[in-house]
Image (cartoon, rainbow, N blue to C red; front, top):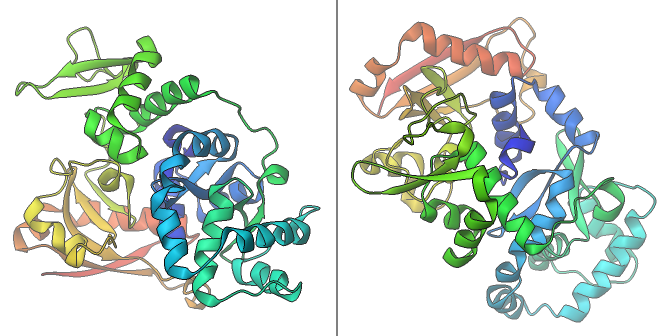
Length: 361
């Protein structure tokens, strides 16, 4: 499933694991094993945001998209932090020395070892240091231990990186985006990738017959992979994209920061703009987990906190609290289908069933 999505938003690690499990039918243990096997990694491939990516794709994707992330904004941030590039390169040198030979360490453990080698590190610098070294291809998050993603050296961890040139990469990016998100607009693709309009247009042209353009009744242009449409531009076949006719189950529990919302600039097909503050309070960029009913956001829910599963007795159902947007949203969800969706989440965690509670906002 990571292969289909190319990059799946993952700043909330546990939420991104559920995003993979939900779409693939894999359990949490299987998702963690995919990280340990080096099939999936976590890094900053675009928009300065953490994503889960197929290991083989993260390198070329970063090379395609990182110029903007490493530009003026990063320079301003270093100025605010009073963090010099000279020191970052010292950290890079020592981090390589610490991790060489296949070692994997958590962020704090790695930086502690770097500091023990005589490199002065201030707390406000830590996030930017890890981000910069990952953004420039030295580090990435690979295996998982006790729920914590561990940092490794990218060139040691990624066994068979793909080496795509810029044109091939642009074509691959738009085709892979549309395979998972299409139909989508040009504006959605620029938002998701962080690339400019001209670059995405070039990618669409380079993708050739892998993608097609269709127009809605109102004249809005949409793009999709050619396998999703017939000669008239209608949606034709099954897809992982939850916005096309094949669609998800009637009721589903989406993770926080899910691609169904964050994968598009225009989210009005799945979320009433008036209800957006209920998912992202104050517009602070923190997106709550969502209850999806017939493809439309109807409420939010609270997943089990990381680490809480071990404390939950084996015979106890997984507790899930739902907050509906209103009474109409609550009535829109068949209780039996909601229970099935909750049980899917419980099975992902390795448990048999869940218990749902909830009320209208």
